[in-house]
Length: 370
Image 1 (spheres, rainbow, N blue to C red):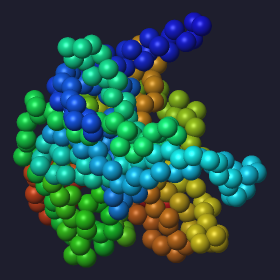
Image 2: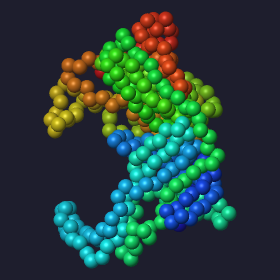
Image 3: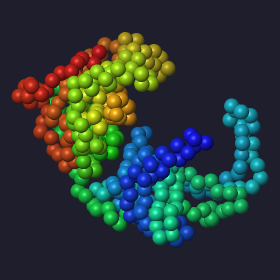
Image 4: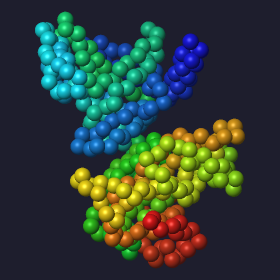
């Protein structure tokens, strides 16, 4: 009972701490409600855009509107598996309505992102009191219902949201080998974005939400990485020389798929520290065959915070995931200040070895990724 009370209290803290904004909600039956809305829990709205395999995260303050659209609706028969572990099904009498949704998010930049939402719970506070709203990927009705009987939030509008310019982040890398991938860590929303890359080394993230982004460039010979002090928590005690050894003491205790891993650099504050992590493992399989001489490696950012006298691990972000084949050259990792906390709407100057020569004190190689 004590644990249940504690969990309930933590849930209420999460709700109270969540960002709130005014919303007008229209339901599929034509009714509507208005009030302040917040996401229940600490996880932001999570969407898998159509045609992509990666999740994207959105805060309510990033949105002008949410629309739930029926992707497929049918009357389905109840069923169960005939035998556990086998695909054969047994169907029963009756039918129930089954609705699958896709979600359209209109961002403050004017962009529209459509995809499949990971079901989310919202809390709406209005004149009629508190009410929970559920944005679901799928709704299964009762056998007594028809498709038209299902009522769901169809449209959410946020009247206080202001359209913002946002902007593109783009640039060009030359002289560091062939550009293979460019990623960016969104420091306000804690997610990794991927750029479009052209054969001549140009990259473009398209229009991104306002904020700052640490960029990472993978070529066939180098990794150029930004690691700024900027974070979702703009204030906090500065890091001290003792903090990295303290985190390194806890670092091996974190569960992970990789046994070989190293913290290469620490940035940020004690309220939000970002550790640049290199991880590798020697064995991996491709097309069900072992790849001789190759190895799998990641470059990641792990976020930490200092609670009283102890450091706590919060989140992990994969900047690069690489299956390196046998005989492929090892990359050299260089921290590049020009890739630190890049603002939306920035056209970066060319990133070349000449620029590194002019900034030898700050463009420092960290290690070979071997």
